[in-house]
Length: 82
Image 1 (tube, rainbow, N blue to C red):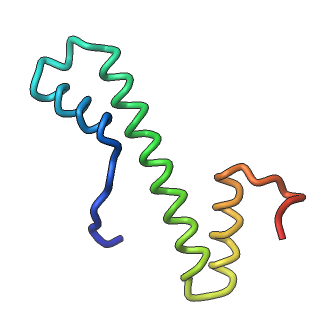
Image 2: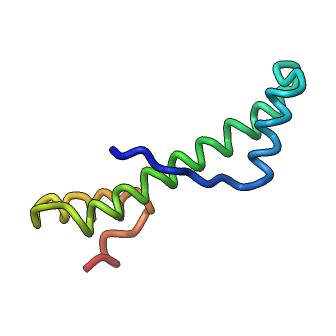
């Protein structure tokens, strides 16, 4: 996987900065918000990777496998899929 830039919401960035610049270990609520925000971002990145693979994989079988994984991940019901 190539090294790429990742964008996060400004509020999450502020929370991370405050965690490291101020004694964040004492603030469990901030830790929970940061953890939740980062988990959400990782999930979104994984969905984006599956979507990209569904469009650009070298073989039709790989594209179909990625498409199905993407639709499963976003929760698309089987009867709504083509």
